[in-house]
Length: 192
Image 1 (cartoon, rainbow, N blue to C red):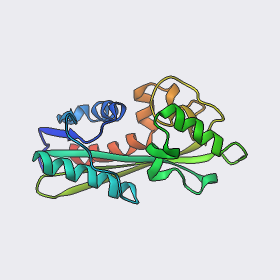
Image 2 (image 1 turned 90 degrees about the vertical axis):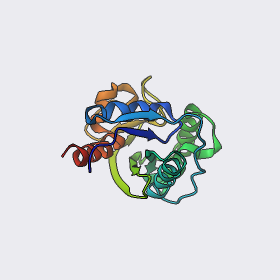
Image 3 (image 1 turned 90 degrees about the horizontal axis):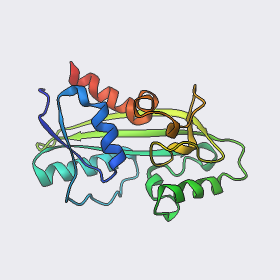
């Protein structure tokens, strides 16, 4: 399959758009941010379902190839929560509020193990789908550190490092992150 010329990134999250654009810069794809189109409600019970729902909806609405990500943080002590509800955890409206809410839930927990999961789906207007998954295990801090990134990045330290994802440069984060790993799988397929 030849590399597409134009791909719409089906997310309203500017941080995700930037990460995806930087990670896929070498493919020759023209990645465009989603503008003026509504995303469907994420009603899936898995990352795969939610990513496919977003990508397929935007591909059908535009007649263009669409790429969507669904990702989340799974915390061992919380039975895998917030998981697919990471962006809506505790019905909080901002990253900072969700981080504080998560820390409140973990206040009495000693087990700080967690993992980030990302699923990338590329949907073609003809209905073809490609799915890529990346995971990264790590630990949660007792308070936020760093000014970069977004979401739970200030709380998450990947295994093998001492810095939170928010303390890393974008390139450093992509080299170890869940989304970076999923995008690396996509690049392997489309670079050959």
